[in-house]
Amino acid sequence: MKRIRLIVMSKMHLVILFCIVLMTTIVALNLGSHAGFLKTLGNSIRGMDNRSGGRVAIVIDDFGFNGGGTKEMLALNIPITCAVLPFSEYTKTDSEMIMSKGHEIIIHLPMEPHHGDPKWLGEKGIRGGLTTEKIEEIVREAVEENPYAVGVNNHMGSKATEDRRIIETIIKILKEKNMFILDSKTTMHSVVKEVALSYEVPYIERSVFLDNVKDKAYIKKQIKQLGEAALLNGDAVAIGHVGPEGGVVTAEAIKEMIPELEAMGIQFVYLSQLVKAY
Ligand SMILES: [Zn+2]
Image (cartoon, rainbow, N blue to C red):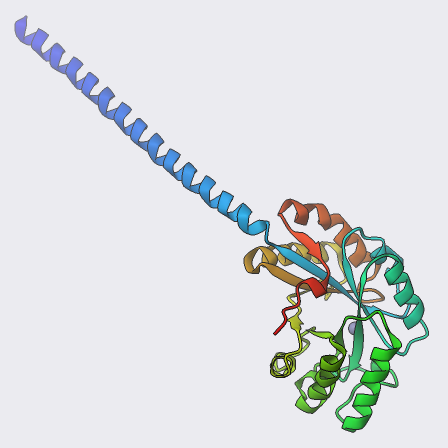
């Protein structure tokens, strides 16, 4: 009998011991996951700090032709930097409408691409075949035509932005007029940054093209990517379009994404607020 009781007692001890081990393990695991939770919380609080610094500038190209989506784009209640084509019958009226809505203007200088229809450049497109004097004359005329413009970016220009002679001619005028340059980066071999830096002209470059594909879901995905780039780098620049390349679809996509980006902590600003002075 005694032996049996002893065995029973040992079994009970074993059960108790098992329970203690189990409880200890559970507590340890809980502490572990609690520590993990605290770590995650800490990371997200730090993330939120970064988020408060994320700034985005939305640049919309191809104003100046009263293109599709012009009114919708200007009705957005965030700062929009409008790149206006020079020498068009709508350059002045579009510019005045943009200013009346409180947005910002840069000149959208037509520049020679490697590929594409030369007609897209218009009569006063900047081409490698022009003399330096002629290029200077065109740039001066474009700048003087639009008194509201605070900077310049390129319309097309994959060939012209690789040409140091052309870029130096433009940059020297921007230096004189206290204007900045946005490189739309239509080529990997652009010399705009290098030349702007050497002349100490404020420079900025495009981070994301919004409407390479004219599809609202695609454009919204690009806008999300823009927000993420701003969280990562502190700021980011998008380029979209009025007219056939984007227009109403791009304006709607931006409008629908504003709350999501604001929820990410993104602040919308004019391009001039992001330009770095050298
Ligand atoms: Zn353009």
